[in-house]
Length: 194
Image (tube, rainbow, N blue to C red; front, side, top):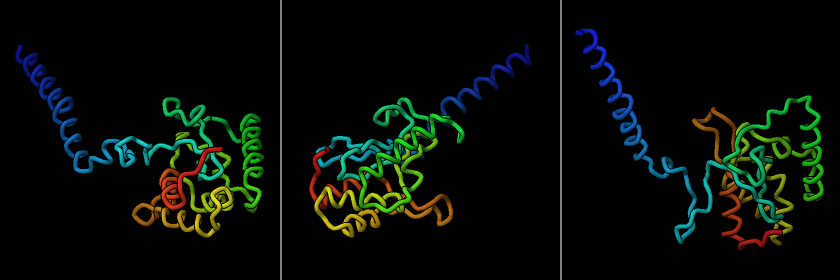
């Protein structure tokens, strides 16, 4: 009986610690940065949610920076996120990459080859919100033409939005696609989708 009561007490203490105290502690710490804890949502002046800095979304208009392709279903469906699981020798992967490459070259006639590889391949999550600065700049001539502004003006917006490596050595420099597109609209007026 003594060992049963000891076991019961241990279970109750464990439940309180792991099921209540720890989650409440994590919640309290998260509230130190509430903007991040709630999904890094980007809102318009009226309070409507535009998107998240952490989840990619589709932009297909010629006047917008386009993200890398998504393996998460049609239109960056976040409920279907995940990689495509297609191997490097997959015929399906090759066909998809070739189709994407053909589309990019057709839509970006001013851009110089080679096409940055991330513009034809999906990320591991299928919802990557970032591009490399090189991939973003590659699209600048198309965006400038569609908006009727000089290419250097679009490149300036991209360069202003480059996030450097985390702690100076983790990851790569990156550009948030949503942030660039919102700034393009702010500076040059909202573009009509094509």
